Amino acid sequence: MTLDNRDGGSTVRRTVLPSGLRVLTEAIPSMRSVSFGVWVGIGSRDEAPEQAGVSHFLEHLLFKGTERRSALDISAQIEAVGGETNAFTTKEYTCYYARVLDEDLPLAIDVMCDLVSHSVLDAADVETERGVILEEIAMHDDEPGDEVHDVFAEAVYGAHPLGRLISGTAETIAPMTRAQIEGFYHDRYLAPSIVVAAAGNLDHDVVVELVRSNLDLAGGGTPSPLRPVAAVPTQAPDTVVRGKDTEQAHLVLGCPGIGRLDERRFALGVLNNVLGGGMSSRLFQEIREKRGLAYSVYSYSSQYADTGLFAVYAGCAPGKVDEVLELTRAELAEVAAKGFTEAELARGKGMSKGSYVLGLEDTGSRMSRLAKGELLYGGVLSVDELLARVDAVTLDQVNSLATDLLTRPTSLAVIGPV
Image (cartoon, rainbow, N blue to C red; front, side):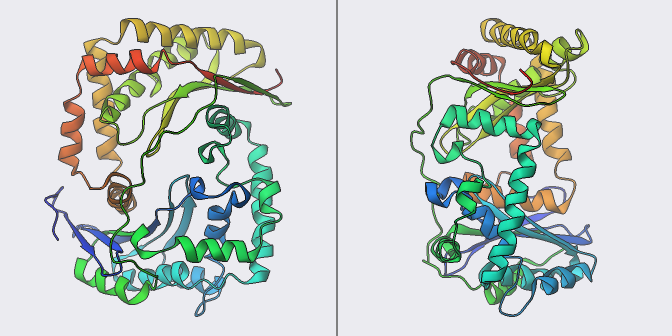
């Protein structure tokens, strides 16, 4: 079907194949490139405790070879036409994608569909990638500015899968067997759970036929519904301090937030922008500009199907941690009690609208918008619809959300020589 969704001369279309696989495209005749992605609605939160990290492990292995191609063939065939391939795993989905010239789209579809549906998962490759992933985990431990966010998530969610590392840990990756990975692959990589998306100079019908011919996955006939929404247990507010010999102390202060289907998500975007989303934000001005206490300070939200996080990050000199925390808590309390002004509301809405539009200036971001809309939200909003939703946010809505969110009990994660 053609969706009632036209942005700047582009046309979005959607087809559901008999297997339950969904194909969405955005035809943009003015582009000379195409981005193509296979999005699997399976991530690290879908793993049993003993499987922790298997989604990410599998992401690595699918590039190691198929029945028709070696790992070198996969990379060389795309690079020979100037294209690029990559993949990433999140807590709720995994994406495999390629970006090529429009004339090379058939090749990209062939290669990407082949690796997703016909990986051989060779035993030798499992051992090779096990070593790579263990090194990746060790590198992550050497990046306290990244690690602190995972420590914070664990402090909030505890043993729940949302509190675990996407990569797994050395304790779960080291003993993981090829049979475990293969079982996860064949049980979870099913057509109804997958969305294929493409954006650029393309023909929808051609893309559908190429995908139908090349993506060979077991199907069920009906697309999987949105991920079920259920209460996610959280831990009692906690403070977790990990002493490390680092130049800076890294801290995250925050609380459980709202899920991505919550109607207040647009108000949350505005709130986040004004509180800590840019150089004009309250936190940046108070902590960095006025007092010079931290080089980096910002707020952020993470949203999942049924829950979320809202937090503030700061990196500062170890001796400044207490002062930064005191100022951060004072600013959160001030916003919760008194709210924002109309001028701040206008600035926050402008930032949201600008980031939406400027973020769609390439085929990769447009491809991602299609897939995330279908997989995570059950539909794709046009740019005009997104902007209208932001414009509709009122000051009362933002201030009401601030009162709710910023008065919740907080957890704190700190990494550094403290």
